[in-house]
Image (cartoon, rainbow, N blue to C red):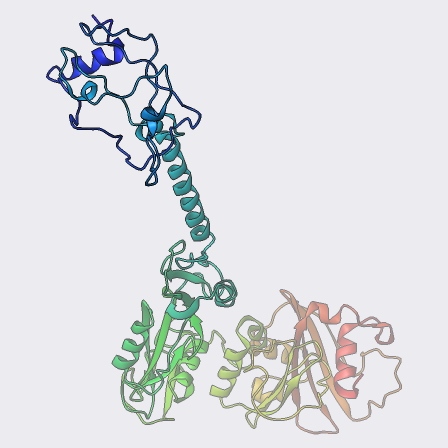
Length: 539
């Protein structure tokens, strides 16, 4: 229990220090601050009555003592502090502060240090909160300035898929130095396909970026290289499909003469690239090709050719052999003979067969039979006009076989050879050349029909029976004319003589449609009369 005489504070001091029997400084005769001259309360002037220790006989006061703080006294001044106070206060007796009593002395806080309890203190939590707030503000500023790239470099935008120009326009304004790396590609040509560093990278102080732009593959310069070097050059730019074609040439064997696609042209890796490579002149193998294709192959090989019809069996209009044979080395421009089975013509007088074979084959056949072209051209219809002669007979390819009207044309390669169609045919020769039995008679007509493979005679007329309203002079004229229909064609035979000249035979044939629009009213509506009069006197 607390000592009633000492009060609660003294009792607690005693309990906290059970060995305490004196003041901390038993010799203390002054306060901790010897220079203190005022109390914490400057108006304090009296001490409370000290409690009287038990057994002293002193009367204890109910109040705690009030201590007057000593102050410096000038020399000659009188007593100070408690000594200077009037009654009822008692003078201080030093023995009261030094003698040992059965009770622990009362601990009296220094007025100076005791005042700390009443000072305003900052709560530690407030300090922590302030520090945290400052750190948060600093972090925000750092993050904001970093995110907005006031420091710490720049973030690379994504330019993949843009053109080089677009990429530069995006990167350069941000301060980036743009380097370009080109790569050959089949896709995305002209576009950025990658970048280093990659998009989204924060670059730091190094603001350089390399963009890779796809460019088209192009055929390199290979003409004049060896086949091996040319292939290597093509492989280096990504070609995957290279083929070789050979061509006769005076260049060194194996030299590249051409490339397809051409040099500098764009391609993708899967495209076929063809190298044309030089080889010595050799006769190409054209056996089995049509005459037209074989001729093209011979010309492409840098050689000339002639066509010769043979009795060898083989497909119609196809080459059955060549001379020299295929593979033979020859000099540039050498002539190769192409042997082709004879067209299915009985002979040159079987005119109806002319419509059944290719015009170029007909030209070749007539040439083989000894006929040469003296005049050629093309009718407005697009059909051929060509005059062939062998010195005995004249064969005219014409749209007007009944009259033999000539077309103002020139000489040169026959239009038949150029593939122009046959519109009609007229054969003119001595009657005996056509048939030894040919004469100005019905039997003569029959003989010529047999010689030319004609049939189905419809009607005939002579110089005496031919009908016409035209004013013509038949003096000295003797003839017989007959016509017939054979399939889709109309044929006619005219055998005659003028003023005793050698008898001539004129055989003509044309499609039926050729005569459909002709007005026969001036000829008694007789086609035989029209053909005979027109042949001798023209239209």
